[in-house]
Image (cartoon, rainbow, N blue to C red):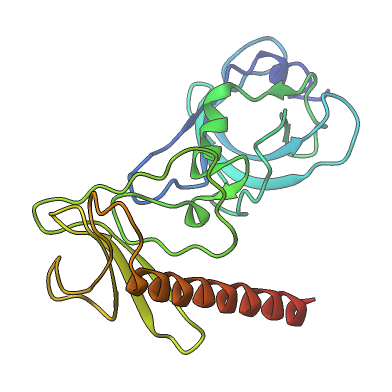
Length: 238
């Protein structure tokens, strides 16, 4: 007689995250269930239970598999799936859980994962790693193009105005910012104050100065050099 043939139909499972912290989300799932014999009597003892994830409700090959020796008391057990073999699974799709006790054969039907498990995907957005996202609370570095379809608004504070920093191929940095009088300024290197830089335009000046034309020409040249470097870098990667 196959001891667990009917029993696994009666398992009641709760899938949930074991812990969520600000720093990291552990990729383990706490599964709690109830194991009975074919007459629905709760079992007690140690049992080898194999857990498998599938991307199909029936048939197909498991995309993840892990075995545990579980201590069952009055039919109840708890296991951390992913504690033996990492859960390197795409949780951005429907998944089903299959279980087998010893070599008794996998239970049917498979259990569809509840939505709480998909909170594992909170570590990423559409499977983009959180390390690839820009944050507004720390200094962030990104590579690639950033396209804005609306305004980019930079607001300074009491510590000073917000600045746009451009770097050329030689690593020289050029700062552009608006001072407290509304003048747009440009300076190579870190400015010592909000007025430590050449005035590109003066508020309400009504015309462009020769200095502005020279400065904007230099700025455009730097941008052209920057774009050329990106093109050469992309060509080398290919």
